[in-house]
Image (cartoon, rainbow, N blue to C red; front, side, top):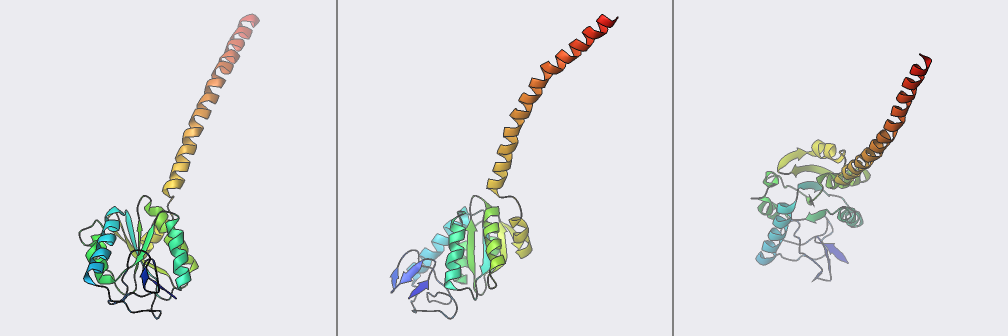
Amino acid sequence: MYKYTGSLVEDGRRDGPLISCLDNTLTCFPGQIIRSVKVNRQDKAQIIEQLKEKAERASIAIVTDFKGLEVEEFTRLRASLRSVGVDCQVVKNTLARLAFTGTDHEVLADKFKENCAIVTGYDDPVAAAKAVADFAKESKTFDMRFASLEGKYLDEDGVKALSKLPSKEELLGKTLGTMNAVPTNFVSLLANVPRGLLNVLSAVKDQKDAA
């Protein structure tokens, strides 16, 4: 049997960063505690340090509600987020507050309540918002709460609006398409100039001959 801790813990052995959820025990989701493991001070310090490092690098931090979400669904969510370079962690609220204090996303520090999963995006905040919004549309139990975009607070509607903007990859594709189109049009224009000039000269010659 497994328990979710930001990574998986099997038979009490750690398989990645230790993530604290609910009180001082490591848990999976509400009602699915498999083994009560006390988080000591050293582990808490490590959790705070790891999350603070992510918060300092992140361009966006989205706080979500995963209450009622099955383990398999949450695993699928994390996989879809990883595919666009986004992280997702479940962490005790008191530790999240400490981790976010003093970062660009400190606006969220006093808003961590109940069951929170924190999504952090780095290079492309729109891609992060899109991935979370798309999953929220598919799931009946997963919700977006609010976010911090470069330190600016966004409510749920703000995150949804952000998710509808073109992503960095989409903008790059449009820009390259425009740049590729310009030389083609310019060459066509240059190609038409001599032809037009010949037509004008020909018309002038015809007028002179007629005179």
